[in-house]
Length: 89
Image (cartoon, rainbow, N blue to C red; front, side, top):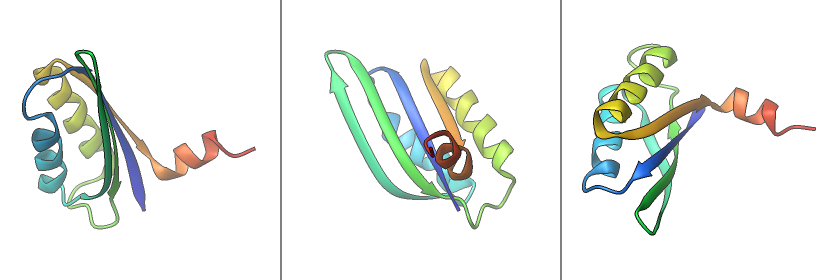
């Protein structure tokens, strides 16, 4: 099982490090990362393996959202099943 994590906000030092550290705390393994900086706007998409989480998915999602609030960015975490259903015709 995987999840898609998106991060959008003003670029600051350490966004990738803080988000990946929070994932590691929940035993979510980062598989892929893409990031861009458009002027001062930071955008990142991560694919994380959530098959070995040490807490439930909702806890990880809430923790990442709270982390985003403290960093001044928006972090959204979507389970792979939801993502696939949204993009399946």
